[in-house]
Amino acid sequence: MRLTCRRYYLLGNFISRRTLTLTRINLDKFQQFILIAPVLLFSMVAHEYAHGYAALKNGDPTAYQLGRLTWNPAKHIDPFLTIILPLLTFVTAGIAFGGAKPVPVNPRNYTNFKKGDIIVSLAGVTTNVIIAFLCVPVIILVYFIGSRIPAISTGSSILQLMLVYGILLNLALAAFNLIPIPPLDGSHVMKYLLPPAWGLSYQRIGRYGLIVLFLLISVGRPLLMIWFKPAFALIGLLQGAVMPYVIPSQWTV
Image (cartoon, rainbow, N blue to C red):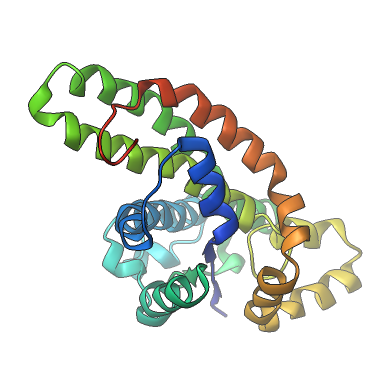
């Protein structure tokens, strides 16, 4: 039996406001979306690639055999979840909510079922955290190059801003996907902490996962803010460290 895992991605007003406070940037919605979209797409593809690669290393070649172990974003895009839904929710509610095409996995192929399930589930969030930290030295490197070559200073500043968003988005994606609500990645760890009978009932929530997440975002935002608090603290630390190296331009003042 082939099982698939669906990942959901979130970018909300509560994240956007946090970014503006930390980076002192004031962009309109369209400018913000243009800068965020490619960063979010790359982060999403990296997340999905990590799941497929981890599955392959744990004995399941399903994603590889179906051509999903690739950096080609087109292979990971679901027309509705990845494009239409985020655009609609961002324009109407200020919350870009969507997902990627499910990465096909078959846990029965794992050499160690429990270990493989946990590793594959955490591979995506681990990758997002690594990307967030890698954005820091790249921002500083771009500063030393762009500040010395006036012709590319504006372009360098825009690239730095996208990398600043990269810190935010990747840590936010990691925190969001660790929420223990099926089918998010955190649920694949939580189910092993429960008694077997409870774990089975818990996994059945996955069929209502999208509805539960919508409710959490719309009416459970205070709880969501508490969950995101450690991520926001780390975002503030990393962004605070790089802000002195962001080249001033019309995008960043």
